Image 1: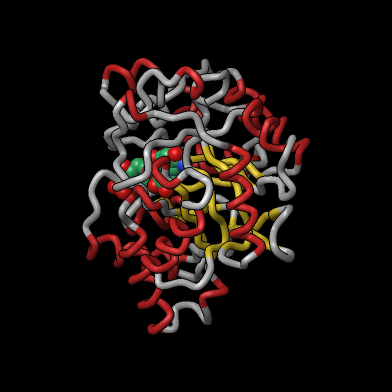
Image 2 (image 1 turned 90 degrees about the horizontal axis):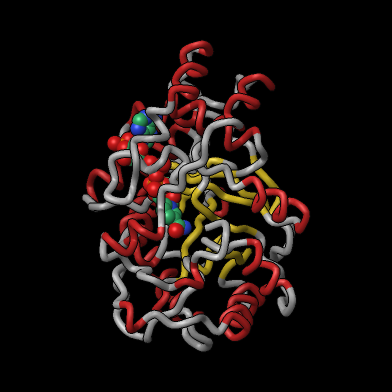
Length: 323
Ligand code: NAP
C-alpha cells in the first residue's frame, strides 16, 4: 500500500515557516514495551505518519529516539527534518530556569538536536525533583506563567524547538498568556472528541491563530484514563455504518473537518493504517450536524481525578470552564 499523504497546517509564531502534519502518532500509554513500540513507530513511518507526540512524563522519549534513529538508518525517511516531534514540559520542571534544562534532557533522550514543538503539559507546577505522574495535593503549585513562558520563548529563540505551545489550557489561561507573551503559543493540545467538542475553545483559538490539537480523539478506549463512550456512541456508530467506515475513522475525520489536528495512539498495524485512511472521503453537513448534537461528556473529570487519587486533586484552578 502506498503511504498516506497526511495534510499539514501552518504553525504561526514559529521560528521560520513551520508546518505540522495534522495526524500525529500518540506515545502516551499505560505500559511501554520498547520492542512493540519501536516496531509500531517504524510501521507508522512506512504508512506515512511523520508527526510523533511524546512528553517527558510518558517515558517514551528514549524509545521514540531509538525508533527515529533506526528509521533514519533504514532510509525510511530522508532526514530528521522530514519528521515532526512534539514533547512536553512536566509540572516538576515548570519553573523559570528549569525549562531549558528539561528541554535539553528531552532532546538527549530523543537523540535529537531540536524539537519541532515544545508544550507546557498542564497549567500547574510541582516542586522541582523527580518527575512523577501522581502529585500529592500538598505539592500542587500555581505556575509562574510569566517566568515559564519567558523560558519557553528563549528555547525557541535558541533553536532548541521550532515552535512552542501549551496543553490543557483553557481560553482564559491562554488569554492571560497572550497578555505578556512576545511569542504567542502556536498550539493548544486538549482533550477533544465528538463527546467533548471544545467548540468555544476552538473558536477562541481560531481567532488567535492558535492550532488546536485533540488528544484522546477516540476517548482513549482501553487505557486507565479512557472511556468506551466515544466509540460506543449510537450516533457515531450509525454514521460509521452508513459511510462504510469505522467509528474511529469517523472520530478522526470529524476532528480534521472541524479544523483541528490530533494525536491518536495505536501500536497495532491494522489500526494505524485504518486511522490514517481518513483523507480521501468526508462527512456530510448532515453528519456534522448530528455530531454537533451529541450530549457532551468530558472524559477527564474533576470527580474522577479526585476519587482516582489522580495527579490533579482538587486544584480548582485547573477547572475553569473548558478543560
Ligand atoms: P486515543 O488515541 O483516543 O485512544 C487510544 C486507544 O484507542 C488505545 O487503547 C488504542 O489501542 C485504541 N485504538 C486506536 N485506534 C483504534 C481504532 N481504529 N479502533 C479501536 N481502537 C483504537 O487516546 P490517547 O492515547 O489518550 O490520546 C492520544 C495521544 O494524545 C496520546 O498517546 C498522547 O500522545 C496524547 N495525550 C496527551 C495528553 C495531554 O495531557 N496533553 C493527554 C492524553 C493523551 P491499540 O494501541 O491497541 O490500537
